[in-house]
Length: 220
Image (cartoon, rainbow, N blue to C red):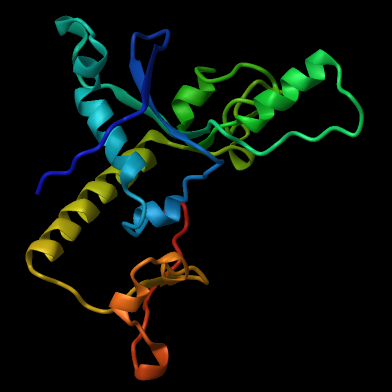
């Protein structure tokens, strides 16, 4: 099974120890967040699979020299809104306030590598970043509970999970699996926005049942 995709943007940075990190950015018309739980269940694989490719083959994609073409460490995966909602002001704003509002409206969402964030590779400004989903406390360290960060081993586990889910989906397609069992995660199902309901004809009153997925914690 071959999976194809196009990565919108790759950013690479090097820390003080010479380790290279690569960041995947996907442009979206409107704000979008990365639901780690959905990645874990195989429902949202795009960004995690992009990061797998970026860490394994990103050096060649961005033209690093052969001696620097080893595996890159995952810096994270972010959605960048290019057409966000309007920024509203009660009175005509000062230019600086207008610029600040524009930056906030384009703030990225996703998941960052905790090590890279601690090295201030995304934003060094204290407090909540207006660029990435992180907060730096008064002690100069990342406030993990107010940031969307994960240790690298958790991020790698998420990437491995996405690869396994993609392989499983490919095998199911090749096996001809067409079970009428859409997922349900908490209160979310794909049926409300599905264009193929007249073809699918999923009917709970007729005995059809959702495939219920258990909520996942960050550690899971």
